Image (cartoon, rainbow, N blue to C red; front, side):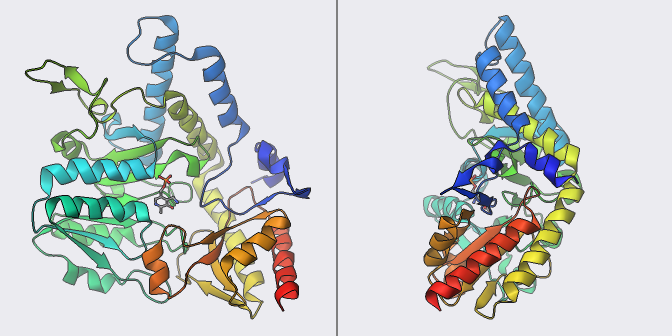
Length: 404
Ligand code: PMP
């Protein structure tokens, strides 16, 4: 990988913060966009904009084709069996809410159980809590170890004949832990329980093959994989999506409407009510083309070297305490420094041009488990460098000087 060449593709990396070169280590929150994605969006907005699926005219036809081509790009990216299984949404949160409602309405009744884990993002907790409240169902939780790994051996005792779904994250946004989702899926399959994988932090790091994984749902956000904000994907197995009730009603999701009886469109349109973010979806296709051309294996290898380097450098401070020390991790470094409030550390780093995230990372139950109010989180992308990590380490030295 030619990092200098790659960095040239990301205009924002040339920006300054407070006059200092920007060091962007907040990639788990959102990733920057390569010029290829920016140009695609600009091109569609400036030359081809027209609403899709409904027009007979030249522009509408062109944009419809590009939108459906983007769907096929997503299908190939995660190796779904059919493009009917790819629903465009506004992001991971929307995808999970869609499943919680549509699957929940169809399959979950009073007394049933949903299993999540203690390390979930709020997006993979609250929609299930809302469902459980609606249906008087029960939410069960897979605990997490001190190292930030799932307690897999506890899962069998959580499963019962009332378990309707297991929803777990592939990679923890707060700790970087890569979960052994194959193990969870295999266990769930033994009991014929569907599994939803929250891929918000995995699609950009790990090659996904939904057929090989045999998960029932896989969701991710466009903005975290170098694509536009307001885009996302719900993959679902066709037979399940067919059975699920529609989520939102409106145009596009119907076949015919009358006051007596409305019938619904085929997949995937049944779950795409209203005008979708079609320019965004086309931009997401461009982002997938971009990272696929580099190669997810190459991306993961390089990001791992960054993680190792950063872990070593930050680990050399005796004032640093890491959270998330799992064997298998993605490029996320979560820590506390000198016992300081993470916000103080983040603020000083910020003034040096270094963007990290501080706080609970939308994972309050996990923070509560560790009895902390949050961490400092540096998350690395393939456009980051060891030199930037050196700047970050200098920043921590400054924190030490100021608070020491
Ligand atoms: N799940 C995980 C693991 C995440 O990291 C995030 C984003 N931080 C989400 C869900 C929600 O994603 P979005 O805000 O893009 O809908």
